[in-house]
Amino acid sequence: MRAKPQPAAADLYVSTHARLGRTPARPLTGEESRLRTAYRLCHRITRVHDPGIHALFQLVPAALRPACWALWAAASVLDDLADQRDVDPAEREARVKAWSQALQRDLAAGTSTDLVRHALVDTALRWRLDLPDLQGAVSSTVGDVRDRRFADWAEWRAWCEALVPWVDHVRHLFEQAGAPMTLRLDRHRDYKQFIDGAQLTDILTDLSADLAHGLLLLPQEALDPFPDAEEDLRHRRWSPAVAALIAELTDLARQWVTRPAMTTGMHPGAANMLDTAACLLRAQLDAVDAGPALLKRPPRLSVVTRTRIFAPARLRAGLAWSLTPLTVPGPRRPEVTAHVPRPAAENTARRTPPPHPGGARPPQIAADQMPAHVAVIMDGNGRWAQQRGLPRPEGHHAGTAAVHEIVCGALDIGLRHLTVYAFSTENWKRDTDEITTILEAIRHDLDEGPLRDLDVRQRWLGHPDKLPQELVQALQRAERRTHTRAGLTLTMCINYGGRDEITRTAAALAQAARAGDIDPHHISEDDFARHLPHPDMPDVDLLWRTGGEQRTSNFLPWYATYAELHFTPAYWPDVDRRDLWQAITEYSRRQRRHGAAPLVSPKSTDRSPRPI
Ligand code: IPE
Ligand code: IPE
Ligand code: MG
Image (cartoon, rainbow, N blue to C red):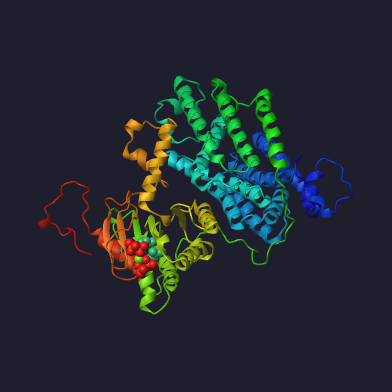
């Protein structure tokens, strides 16, 4: 039997849902009735906009469905606002922004005049969704208004990531209800691939509708091997090139959505939902790959196919959820401190960092002499503290201010990639108190620090094993919140080890070979690089270590094989942005050869390597 909420939890939300479509036992208050109407609307939007998603939501316990509808309806409304092809892009962008700003106000007020936002606000507060994160998910749609062209799969994937926060909120609901949909952390790659597969299926399904609006949401890299396919598609001509392209893409999407390991260890009800989603996507791909009709109308699944998928899934869902008592939280008012969610979006990020306190300005470096990627081993915190008679943890707190300085310096000088070593796989050998201080300082800085509001895309490199869950969540939140920012990519290496990274990448390649995705006899350096955690991260041009030691301590071995090395004596908390500029200036004078012979004789050049 499906678990029923306890009477204490039979609040407005549950009664709102239970009464949908039924005559209420007692007259509803004005507020109840409005909330009921709001959730009803969200239900209808989900059903009409996305019948497949609606059917999947029917596999979750009734008490969770209204929240799922509210999230999905909000995402659909935003999608529609961004997609109105008869409206010019500036106006579309203005509409999406206005919706997003109104949501910010509504979250602070705890109510909304717009019915979809009203349901979303109730869901967000009741289920304690991460509000800045929700704002981030909404804001990423703003960037989606622009015309989309993707040179390669990497660009296409970055665009797909906009969906991840919405799916994560649905996962969060399950967690809050006591039925964790938590992914094994080492399955994140599978999860992302699954979402890519779902997006690709969606794009292929909607191909005819998109083409009618002049849109082709496939990366150039996928089209290139099929000469003429793009031209034929744009004229909606079914040709051998188009047929071959569609066969290739449906095959790829099938592989991406078939990730059985993804649901390992998950609650059976949650796993059932994801497994059914995979089945549904594969059936949809079969319908896509059925010939020329694809270019005329979106292929739909037959009732027989849907019944074949959903009838057993509903049985499994009933059984799985009957084993889990669910906890449904009551409605909540916004907290005073959470009044205005922090601006989380690319469009609200500051373009200009605060100036150097002494007014120093960055040097002018010619574009072709700028490093694309600087990596820093931030060493010397402990000695800095000891030198002052302070406990070592004080050095780590002081080191945080230096990180802010260096990030500002990187933005000032126009650096594209900065990677910092904050905690190594070897640092677990330290005293527990020191480890706790380091990790807690990082978490606090992610959630509260000044980098949040700069034009910085934050990423994490390292492994979740042994890290506190709150830190992992804060890192993932920061990644999601900032993924559309374009100023500087800041990669934080936390629980990072170069050998660990290489070993895991080798394991991922072995898995790909076993799955038949790659030929083990022809593995190239590029294949290896594509299986690294951040395949788009460029090689390190300049590797800088502070604190006087001259070693690389297991830092970025794959990326830094040809890095210029720069060692400076100052302890990390004593550095400021001028030290970064100095390092870059020194770099700009180096002559890099990458194994080639020198272009000119060392005697006749004034750009020969100089000691730093
Ligand atoms: C670098 O400073 C920070 C981390 C390793 C986390 P250290 O803590 O290594 O400082 P020293 O090298 O002991 O002075
Ligand atoms: C390297 O510093 C790691 C970080 C800066 C996070 P360590 O202080 O741990 O390096 P070793 O042990 O002196 O090589
Ligand atoms: Mg050290």
